[in-house]
Image (cartoon, rainbow, N blue to C red; front, side):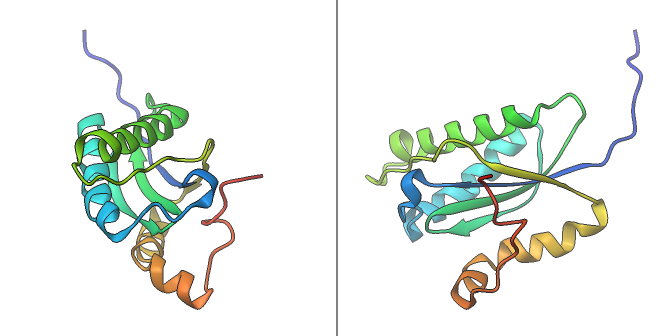
Length: 139
């Protein structure tokens, strides 16, 4: 039986912090973390547009299908990435994520602007030029 298809444009920006906002995303961790997030997104069927962050948090921009639960995306990526860094990467460094996350939806037309914001995280933080909504992960 053929399943009915549905049009969708479901674009989500996630941000989450390291445990206690510690600077755990070192250059060595980041060099392994971002490619691993890309690998995991592909494996789970998420369309990754951008991933990057600073020493104490991570931004991810993905498109999802209607059957994917937002909470599962955060749980899957946070859990898999910390397990990978802590147990499989061979780095000898630790990565623990804080409970919770921030997530907002975007229009497809906003993707390029948010991709650019994510790719330039270090510069935005160094200059204090931050987006309140894109950096928010707590109430």
